[in-house]
Structures are given as C-alpha cells and as structure tokens.
Length: 403
Image 1 (cartoon, rainbow, N blue to C red):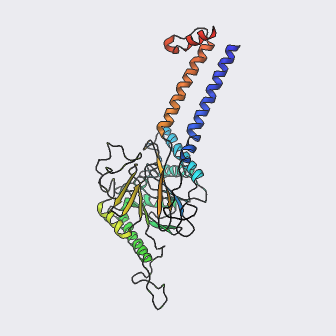
Image 2 (tube, rainbow, N blue to C red):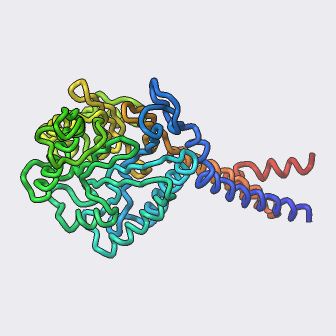
Image 3 (cartoon, helix red, strand yellow):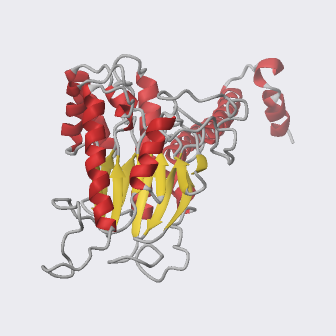
C-alpha cells in the first residue's frame, strides 16, 4: 500500500506539472512579458491619455504590427497553423488587455496565401483572422494590403484587391484622420511605376491626396469672402488637419540593404549586407522619391522584411521597419507602441515571448516528466530497471529504502 500511494503521488505530481507548464507557456507567460512594455511619453508634451501632450483631445495611442502571414489551405500544415496562430492570438489579446490602444495598424501580409486563395479558402482565412484579432469597439483596427494578400505586382488584379477592400471595408489608399493626426495609408504593391491599371489608379489617388494635404497645409490668404477663403488652385480640395502625415505601407522605401540596421530584432548579421531588389524587397528609388516629395511625411512605418530597422531618408524623413508579429518568421516577434500628437511622436518597441523560451520550458518539463515516470516504474515494479535504462535511479531508490 505505501508503494502504491507513492506511485499515485508521483502520477498526480506529473499531471499537475503538465497542466501547470501548459498554462504557463500558452497563457500566463504573455502577461509578465508584455507587462514590461509601456507607452512612450511625448518629448516636451503635457498631459493626456497617451502620456504626452499636444493636439486636440490629448495624445493618441497607436499599436503597429506587421506580417502576420496567416497560413492557408495549400502550404499550411495544421500544427504550424495551430501553434503560430495561437501565439499571435494570445500576444494580440494580451496586448489589448494590458495596453488598451486606441487604434491598431497591421502593415500588410495579413494572409500568407491571399494571392492564390480560392473563394472558399479566402472566407476561412478571413474568419480565422477576425477570431484572432477580435477587439472591442473602443479600439479601431486598420489593415493595409501586402503582396501576400493580393499577390506581387505581376499577380495582383482587381478581383483580389476588391475582395480585400470589401473584407476590411476601406480603400487600400486613403487618408485616415484621428485626433487631428493624418495617417496616409498606401497600397505600396501598386507603386510599380509601369502604368498598369491598378498602378495608374493608385497613383492618381495619391496625386489627389497630395493636393488635398498641400492645400490643407497652406494658410489661406484673406479674400473678399473672408479670412478663410480658398487658396489659389485649391478649390474643391478636401480639407485635412494642417499637419504632415504619417505614412504607413507594406513595402519599405528604397534602401540598399539592412547593413546599417541594429538591435535585437534586426536581420541576422549574415543577411544584413544582402542587397535589396527594387520593386521586390523595397520600393523603387523613383517611387520612394515621389512619396517623399509629394507628402513630406514626418514618419514612415513599413513592414515586409520581417526584421526591424530605422532609416533616415534625405537626412529628414525617419522610417521604421516593423518586424513580423509571427513566430513563423522570427524567434522574437515584436510590435510598435506609438504615442502621437499633431506636432510630435514617440515610439517604443514591445517584444512577445520568444519561441525558443517556450521550447526550452517544454523540453525541461519533458525531461522532468521522464524522470518521474522512471521513478514511478521503480516504485511499482519488483524487478529494477537496468542502470543504463533507469539512469541509476532505481538503485538509488533501493538504497534509500534501507537507510
């Protein structure tokens, strides 16, 4: 009977250990890791919900992530889907609960197989996305288009673009204004510059948006109709707050490589000096210069490379490349926390749990479980295991009983 009680005790301890490790790795781990993150204060700002001042209604709290790559029906293994999508869901939901952003941007490549998904598979992918990235009415979710959502330039067509825009109920190129802050959302997949129908449509829209913003930034001269009369050449232009925009898109602006990128979320050292291909890894020089000249953005946020990087274009325009949010693309996913006002911005980075940490915890727990199984066998069996199989534990337990 004592032997049976000891075996039962070991079995109960093993079961509790398995449940505890599972709960820790799949739920609890996200809370202490993300709780270390905080909204950055605006430099020189006053109060406000975002920890900084400036702007009507206080500062805006924005969370920015990229490249979720929800796997599809063709190339997605069921366990890969289960593991990585659960990681993203727990990371996102925990971040919403702890940080309470007012707006969330996802910078494209929402899906991995949007470029070739059948209507049925597309609907299933969209259903999973809405489940994973569910949010309350207090948080606005804004999704940008990426090459994996509608295909690279040579793969995209109107049907793929329109079904993406229909799902997320918005145009892929537009200006979104919140708390007096202009966000320029760009379909960078269409900035190929070759005159394709979608490319022409997007470029025409960008020309119009550039005119609208330029007119909004100009101070209207006094006229007979009053001090707020229309500026010359700006009749019919849509009004926006008179502040330079924050540019968000999937592709980064042109840069030679990631050689100057640093930090724990930068590309691996062996990849940083690989030259980027225009119109594939980054936008072309021509398209990049057009965006900078037309809009003069105060900040650029992009994705696509799956690694973090900070670049200053023309010694004036800062760009931050946001790493992938998925374990499938990197061991240490992260997202950006941005505190924004009409005049200034402040950014910080928040890391999710590392996949290697979770694997190490499960591996260690498995080793302990194996030892408990060997001990239970030794206690329940009258015939001891060979030392090479029992790791000497049976002999140790046998000696202990006679002490």
